[in-house]
Length: 262
Length: 303
Image (cartoon, rainbow over the protein chains, first blue to last red):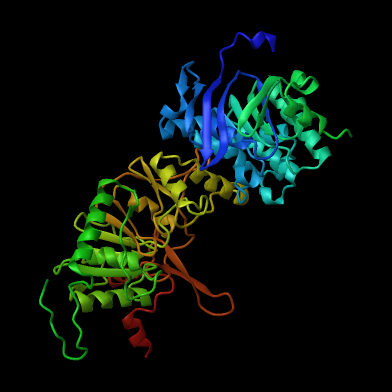
């Protein structure tokens, strides 16, 4: 990553806070994401990981703080100041969102090819043959057989659905992808293949990724940097290997020591 | 409000065209807004009508709001003037508005329709009122109304092409044959109600005002006269209308929309104009098809 240190941050979050009534969602979180970098957000259930992801991706509005994003023209824009149309364009071209439950991220009644092609059609592609060729290419990249292109995702296994979700998000070549527990609920061998796939695509496309996970093994495999959350606050941050091999905070030590050795 | 005219038998009187004046004003406001924003679905406070939803409550309310005492009303259902729905609605306005009714497309000033646009080209002094069951073209792709309104507001219509993509993927061609989505005046995507896509080109640059009323869904939308209406398609799968292999069996017309009529249980069938007025007029003009009855003098000769 040393070559990228000088790069300008892609996304800058400052003092993000969000409460749900009296309950804390996320408190005073600041972080930067650089191009091509994978940032893992770890912590136990209820620690505010998903809230943070929602705030970063503007799906949730913060009570305090702001998120700025470097647009393709190099401008660092406050996302709260973008119009609805600009924000949605950003979401379907420059960003991706891979959800834990594939049914939330896919159109379950639309064929695999249609799912992948939707973003292309949304940005103005109007040639069926080209859309289909691009969809076929992307299904191949995520290891879905070409003859499944007209099947709808209801006929797919959990792992295939996640891979399809990834293809659907990456087809417009985004620069930043949010992933919320992408391997949750999958058995370990399927998880391993999915992680391999994500890792190779991230490297190949130079994606920046914010991945939320409670699985430290996933964080170790995929991420360059790591943020540990507890009770809505960031309690430790650092390079992944550093945090996992030499955790400083007692809670992180507990988290790391709780991982079962296979 | 006009003085009630007490009829002889049932001792009931109606306000002109059934609806009260305030309701008609409310509907006219919605219609004006709809005309100002072509293709945009304007919400309106649809009333209960003395007929079930799905029988044209939206169209009837729009007709009631635009109808004047001098208007001549035609009602068609599937192109025909003599089907239950058409006869009932015509009777409804004969009774409640005492307006003249007709089955002739050229004589009518207001035409309420379900499922068809007449074959005869409409004029600029005519209004075509459509009965719409589901006004939202994105409904079956995106069930959330909050989301579809956003999509319309931002003219994000990629989803509409997903539907057409699915058609081609499954059937090899765009298999949507009715309620085929159109883009109105280069802006809003609109469901043209369940007319066959054969009729879509007739909406483009039409001299008549086209009004759409959806009673259950409480929406009104419009295409002002001479508005560009484009059917959505792909570059390599362009929009095409249905074609028929043979002319109408009764009037010999070609290039019109035909109904298939089964004649017996041994595969006998005929294809006739779906627009009954058009077909009758042509037959009166002496046009004949392959299954036309023998000419009168020939019949008399045989007798």
